[in-house]
Amino acid sequence: MNLPNGACFIIDDFLDTSLIDEAYNIILDDAKQEKELDSFFIKKEDINPSGDCISKILHKTWIDNLEIDADRVLGFEVWNNLMVSSHVLYLHVDCDEYTHQTHNRIVNPLYTSVLYLGPKNGLVGGELALSLKYTFKDLDKNIDYDSITLEGENATSGEDWLKIPYRYNRLVVFDSTRPHLVTEIKEGATEENPRIGLTMAAWDYEVKTL
Image (cartoon, rainbow, N blue to C red):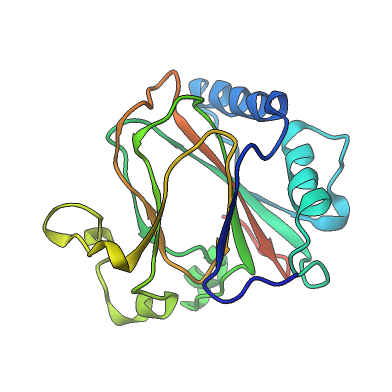
């Protein structure tokens, strides 16, 4: 199965909640100790379905459940975003960061997937918003991406965005060429119960992580 260009799909109540909660607690505990889950790349063939919870999530997500470009996907780049109230993740595009920094060239993953690990309560704000107006090619046009939000004087009209509310145990898969942001979290995410998304980007070659 292939996703059409620009496509996005959402699966709710995606995995067993015990696995979701285990990953959430591990990432949160590391953050409290001022450690972070470093981004890493793993080949599809090396994912251990009986390994740690992140390996299990990868396997259950992309090998057991998703059949997207299975013949093309070599492996996955994995990282997490931990956000609390008042935090914003500005408009950006997922890309090979090493190639971007060393050769000033943007190469996107085949697909980006985000699994929301917690908190279990709903949030006010904290939506994933995909830009339907800009493309990754606009990065070469000196656009001030940090000035583009969904609120205030720089707001873009609603028809230019696909907005996906945060929901516990929700998986979102989308076209990686699509710039996206996370809106300001106004309520519901604290230092003790932050918003944590686990990102798994599918690649057709091995990327170097920074």
